[in-house]
Picture 1 (cartoon, rainbow, N blue to C red):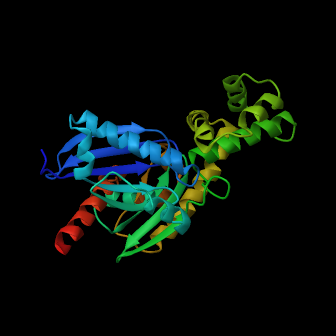
Picture 2: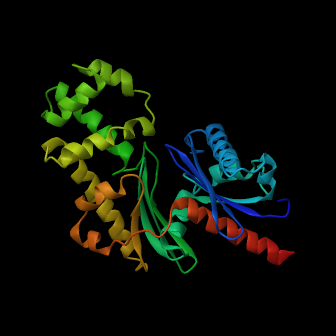
Length: 297
């Protein structure tokens, strides 16, 4: 359909890139998933994942590849709150009819509250938070794996490996959880654990998060201590968001449902279920840009 307009929403994170394709009437045509899309860590990989997810969504919808030229895309990526990385992405010679770029936080907030007003904490491979209120955005956390991301999947994995190494040194106690970690990696001393993780990515560390929560829920003292420390930080982050008096607060991301029972009780009572996904929020962003361009004609 040569005169049809399409809208593509993309949520790019440290572990994967998710895309949602809709027609002009808002009907879902296809969804797809590709690899990591964090331009701070690897711009070329991020672009490759975005292109793969976009092309796959078009193919799954049964549309020709040329449809991308009729598609307005909204893309939210980690790291685009930093001017340098946003500028490099804006230089991309994209294949779309129009492109609206923002942070993964912004599109997630748009989707969670179906509006420009609300607050979210993202708990996935990384962690970060945002309040959108009165056309302003206030971002917290999200400083990357080396400098922040506390309470995230990658952080839980990193704390686990650190604890295991210190238990090998006799500095910290072991537990059934630490024993399970050693079985997971097939190691009986520190050397293979160090070799495995010296150059590991955040996504690789995050693979340990389900094991942390599995044992924390069984009251393993080590796993519970790690989860409690992460949850305390996320509760403090949520309190900071609530100081802005947002209309709604939601926790989203792959670990959101796991961490919620560990949050401070008042934070748990403040939470509301997200309305839509981050990629749906990216489509809201794309439609807004399309409306602006239409008015300018």
